[in-house]
Image (cartoon, rainbow, N blue to C red; front, side, top):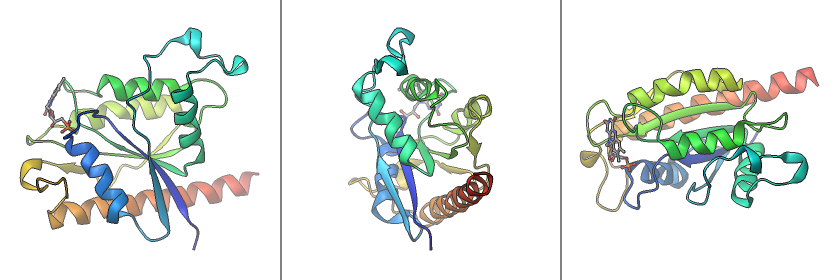
Length: 194
Ligand code: FNR
């Protein structure tokens, strides 16, 4: 069976972040068989500046070059994020902006899934919706179903950051399986057109 490789990013830089914890739970036991993930922390990504975004001059900041490489190597991207003020956290949108430019953008045709955890009831829904036009503009391949929202996160994670809720674990696993399937479909399409 083909091995599929994911790149995973979190939209929160907070040490105790539920979303970063979720990403680590994915790496530590929620992936489908024959699937790997590289978690790429966004702490070192600077604010977007088009003057530093010239691929021919290798002028992109090192952290940005590494992020683009991580996306390039990946068959699909997993975004795990809270919503900030009913939308995509600025640090996360900023990272996507850095990866989005140029004919060599690693986001073009890339399968992607979004999920989120919130201490409240509906947090992350508006962030997930806000990503739709972004994915459309970038020519990405978003996974639409199943949707994953882990509400009332305090009751679903233990104090060590382990996702203990069986239903949530199952749903996350189902989304990752669907993303794996989408990535394999995309691989076949790409190989057929070569
Ligand atoms: C929030 N939070 C929040 N929650 C929500 O349900 N809808 C929202 O629009 C917002 N907006 C928002 C803006 C900013 C700037 C912050 C810092 C927080 C609350 C947010 O969901 C909560 O802090 C999460 O715990 C953040 O995710 P992590 O850091 O736990 O992954």
